[in-house]
View 1 (cartoon, helix red, strand yellow):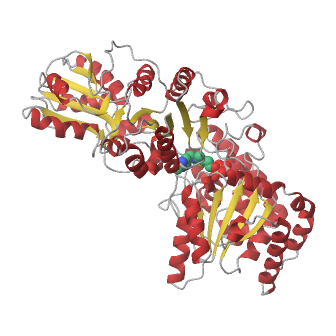
View 2 (view 1 turned 180 degrees about the vertical axis):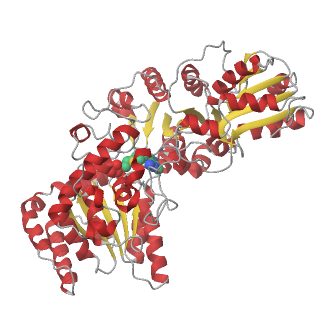
View 3 (view 1 turned 45 degrees about the vertical axis):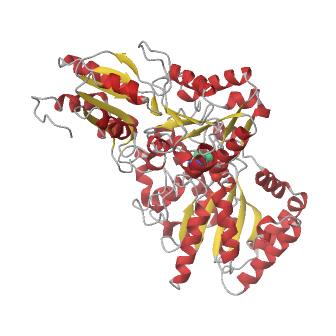
Length: 626
Ligand SMILES: Cc1ncc(C[n+]2csc(CCOP(=O)(O)OP(=O)(O)O)c2C)c(N)n1
């Protein structure tokens, strides 16, 4: 079916190909990507945009000796295809299948594990310095997008790189997009470089110079410098990277494989850090993705002809976005902040309707937290919807800038718990632990969309930091009666005897289902919605807990330091005779795969929970806590 692709077993097969064949191969790779990702889901648009850069890299460098460090890693599919993993694409991101991000354990060609943004230059610099200490001479290449370059770590690394002056190449893959349109002054600067009229006028001439570069020999270095100086001349003033001590080449057409290979060959011999600015089109080669690169950044399965279709299900992100907008219409103090995720967090409508009160800070979660603190100190009520896993980037800022000063910032932690196919870098399974240990934060988790709305309203009534964590997916309302939300208090949603199952967030849904299964076994457990991780109103909670012999807690957070362990610690002194069993995720990094499969594997589906509870009962086979 494929003329070239079928014979690519390793990067050495790329090196045998001529430019025309490489171009044909690019087309085949795009076809393959569209076909496979339309079935498995995954990151499509970014990979379609980086085909030629990846081929040119493998044409010019030799992995695993040379190191490629991908930023975020969502654009590494082409690299995976070339490095012997093409057959794995039928199970891309599935349980036990090929990971969606680089993994050192998966291939020696993957130099560094990744999933969060803006780490590539730091990691690559570490590798370059390690190489120098070992007196080796391999190349190190960081590949970073213009979106990832907005992250603070990337700036810190460039600052260090320009100082250390290690031999290292940074490839800036500039498609003017983060997930949504890229933002910020750096993005404006890159735009100026791209559209500089002198660059456009003389582009042909510059390409001519690059084409004249011989493949090997001492001339390479001189010619490369001439190209660079030529470029520099055209681009002056404002060579931001040059001023930092990093030699700038570009902009180059990131889809012209001949131009790329010549340039990569030429910069190999250059001493000190080099940055190549390549212009690419996100989604290239698939019209739907070219027209809507934001929608095709990360996709589920889709029909290739029709493209991605809108889903009918109302998600937690939808509820969060709509409710916050409704509240902001009533209260002018409310402002919303995103770290490059207006769509994923459901904030698009807010941005469009109230643009002056909406701030996209780029992929800069740490900055976002302190920016919120400043807004709150200035009398506003900032809400920061952010994926749970990415808020890990702002942990010190939460403590130092928000909690210590008791500033009324509301963190809306989307994608809490198991997120599925993105895997270990993306599961939001630490937030109850890392928030639970910080004083001064009211931390809640709703059992459904309705309760999320109530919690958002409630956050305006407490004049202090608040965090609300909610899972990915469907937010339909649970069919249970509920009591008014009161600070630190539980809500008993199903009365029962002897045993209580206390869930928090998604744990409540699991508890309700498990209680139905237990009913079939003749048991009648109470089901309690904990609502709060902190504070815990211990007087009230112990007045409920004392009625039971055994309490089971359920949470989709790791066991250590989570809701259950916190409750156990506080209740065991107050009611020493009460047995408490914590059901949570294990203290290990959880792999990628379908959420249901993972919940089952780790004992957090209703059946496993009910088996565990009945197994703990006196007279059962095990009859003891596990
Ligand atoms: C710390 C962190 N925040 C947010 C994200 C979510 N995210 C994944 S890719 C991406 C955009 C990256 O844009 P860019 O680097 O330009 O790559 P492109 O997809 O455009 O090729 C974002 C915001 C992340 N992976 N890590």
